[in-house]
Amino acid sequence: MSPSLSRRTLLGGLAAAGLLTACSPGAAAPAPTATRSVTHPLGVSEVPAQPARVLALDRRSTLPHLLALGVTPVGALTHAGIIGSDFPSVLAGAVDGVTVVPVTDGSDVPALEAVAALQPDLIVGWARGLEEVHPQLAEIAPTVGVDIDFSDASVALRSIAAALGREAQADEVIAGFDARLAEAAAAVGDPGPVTVLLGVGGGQFRVYRPGSVTVARWVADFGGEVVPDPTTLPGDVTDDFTTISPENLSLITGETIVLLANTGADGEAAVREIETSPLWPTLPAVAAGRVVRVESQSAVGNFGFQGYEAVLRTLTAQWAAFA
Image 1 (cartoon, rainbow, N blue to C red):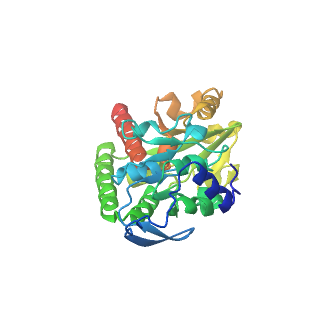
Image 2: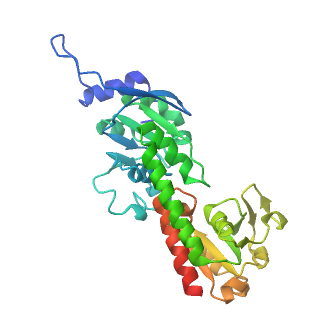
Image 3: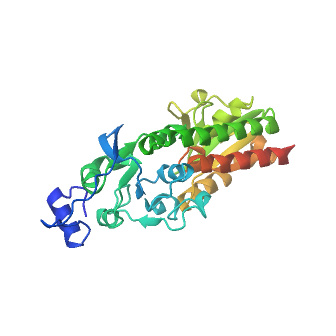
């Protein structure tokens, strides 16, 4: 079904499938449900005060954030197109019973029939991913779009918590992680000069700035120095990183390299590009055996605070091994 599905076509199809309840003249009207008005990037929605059948419709962070807030959704959009599996491995055991919602193509567009079949009373997802089909989704259930900041998972967590009336739970999640981050900083000590690097494929490598991806920010917070300054490197410069080509790998000067790796076959291929470069073994960190590999989707918050926790465990364990 295309994103341009009309309201008439959608409702007709749902009625034929028995997913809309007909009201006869003698039928008792259902009791009104208490609602709250939620303002979000896609408009204003009247959401149930106590939603019971929440649907997570993005592949970024809505599913882990709902779980962290104590809400197990009835369904969630498949992540297979970007990580090769329906749900992130860091959520193993927490997603039992969550129905996989397929997409209509390789993007975030969900199969609307599958959405309707789950009879959600609230739909939540990344605003940019839901924008095209928001009107159709809103015919099925109140649909809230959330902003996602790929340098700070707390932004989306707080937005989702506000839609659910679970702000206190969000505060607890964030405070708990901040406490563990402080413990990790004490355990790691001064990390020294560190380079944060990501292979994106096609012979292109990203070198991150201190205040960009969370790992780089944590290294700086621990008292380390994120090097080199990406703005001094030859390549495509953005606010968060500089993309360099293989011949410039020799400019990587960190005594430790945090190597970000995307989950899935493409991510593994990008890592192989880095590790098979003739310059890779000549780098000081590689020669000293000080390379820490972490999952990039976890590092940018796509897998919520569960992903952050996994990255933090990896960092502290690796630095302990270096000592």
